Length: 132
Image 1: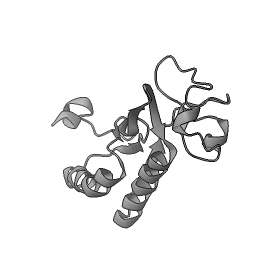
Image 2: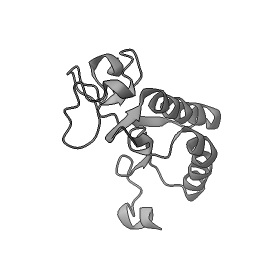
Image 3: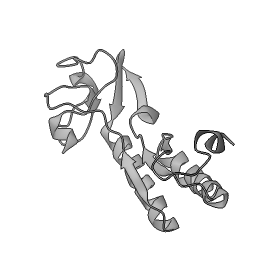
Image 4: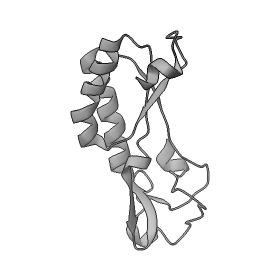
């Protein structure tokens, strides 16, 4: 398998598996992935990327919904808790600036607000308030 080629000596910390599939699919599919890796005996670090699996276009803006990001993070930790495995990390894209690139969260950014302070040159980021 790919992990055998990348880490033939099974050195801890060498392989991170980053999952990004949305909360519903994550709850369905992550347990199977964890089981397969556990059966193989490989030592990996599990990381959740709730940003890329939750990107959509609204009013011609590439955006993300805070609630979907949070739901995927919660699903990731719930699955690991139920399987008695260790969640290794979460990938977030954020800024300390008061941007309006992701909808929802504490700052209540709506679809109509996206144009106000949409400054990203690539992917939408959580703003300072949403990040906390």
